[in-house]
Amino acid sequence: MGLFDFLKAKKNTAETAKNRLQIIIAQERSSRGAPDYLPLLRRELLEVIKKYVNVDAEAVKVDVIKDGDHDVLDISVALPEGPG
Picture 1: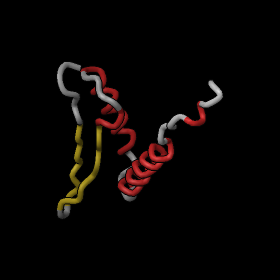
Picture 2 (picture 1 turned 90 degrees about the horizontal axis):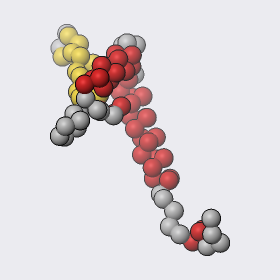
Picture 3 (picture 1 turned 30 degrees about the vertical axis):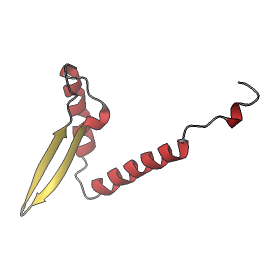
Picture 4 (picture 1 turned 180 degrees about the vertical axis):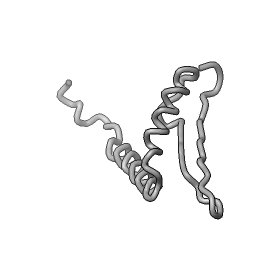
């Protein structure tokens, strides 16, 4: 650490923290009223998918959508491009 390191441009950690907080709040809002099993189902799906494809934790989305009188389980997996 040099004497003038404080003059260097710092990474915008506030913006990163703000983005992360917005993601957490969005997840909390979307999970309200959702069945309790969704987080566990998401985690287990991610573990199974990771056995075959290299994906990150944000690649798997599990939601319940109301369709009239029925609840529809919506599972979305963003696969990486190319061989994983």
